[in-house]
Image 1: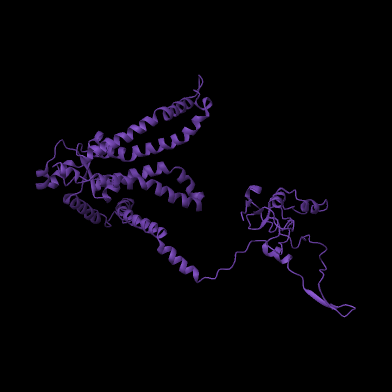
Image 2 (image 1 turned 180 degrees about the horizontal axis):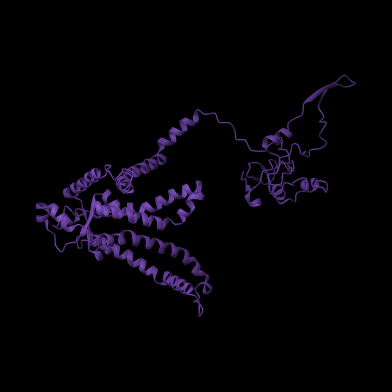
Amino acid sequence: MEFVTALRGTFDDGKPSLFELLSEQQLASLLPPTLRYLLTVLTHRYPRYLLRILNSFDELYALAGLLVERHYLKTRGGSFTEHFYGLKREKALAAEIPRAAASAPNVVRDALKLSDADIWKNLAVMVGIPYLKRKLDEAYEVDAPRAMLGGQYTRPPAKGAKMKERFLYYYRWFLRNVYPSLNAAYYFAMLAFNLGYLFDNTKYHNPFLWMIGTRVRRMNGADYQAIDALEKAVAKGGAPRSGGSLLSPRNMGRRLMGGLSLVLPTSIFALKFLEWWYASDFAKQLSRKAAESLDLPPPTVTGLVEAQARNKPKPKITRTSEDGVVVEEEKADETEESKEPTPETAPIAASTLLPIFTVPPPKSSDLCPICEDEIQTPAACQTGVVYCFSCIHKWMSGTHARQEKFMTKEREGKWESGEGRCAVTGRKVFAGTEGLRRVMI
């Protein structure tokens, strides 16, 4: 792209290519969502401290951007991301002065340097307009679906309504009827200026820079010398004097702002490395080799161990009959009258502290734990146990025949029927019967 103007015979070493400007804009546009994502992850861990900050992210980011961009405009002559690409901002000229720029670059730099008024105009373009556009985009995304509700939502306020209601009505009307055309005009203007800049028909790649009379240029030797001289002066002035300290807010602020130029390329390298790591086959092969040497035990479901213990096979005893035949019989359980659980072996509900009615797991995985027959239309619970769909559906609803038979008047208020729980483990199943999953065999 930067050689298109050379074909027209107007090549300018100080003019950045459109590719550089678009790359800088893309990097600047990626910073807010990246910081918001990181803040969202931290808010999940510390919601008590960071939830308010996340809710006011746009305002806080605009305030931080105002401070950072103002510092970089005053000291580097460009924005934070523009300095990363070796770009600067200066006043626009009616005509180029290549001879003066080559013979006296320091004088030209000082003459075209942004004044305080120019810095505030650029801050309005760099911080104010993006903040305003983000808020309007969010409001439009919220208002557009609500407008489909019809006249109840778009009805004008009644006579004598409060100022706030009238303002909200006209604001919504603006979002529905004016903002889509205004947003399209914004992008068309950006496209027109980009094409004009590409073919060297304009000095501005952005319509707002044309309005404030500022253009973007490449940094030259005079700019780097001025930055080095400023950093040396700050280093000398930052030494502790009789009335100053290295920990003073002024010195700490300068060091923090200067350190951002190192944080940005480091963070970009770290993100690109993580992107390559998770997308490449090298990480998968490395993790696969590390997992091959591990002998992982099977997962243990809470409550299933106790249920298996209740269904443990009984020890057998041998005796000789009257005919002299040796017979093996299961040893009778003195405490077991039926297959019903006891309060000592049943799981306990955390909310009511009552024992939960459960059934033992079957001896074969082909059998349903509830009806003890072959599974028909298998359905898996969230605990991983498979039942007949009709059995577990009735059990979750609390209407199964085994539950009604077990929950007699003597047990009411002393047991939980297992409604809304897994029939084997007694664990709570979220979403009730909606949490069941059909198993396709």
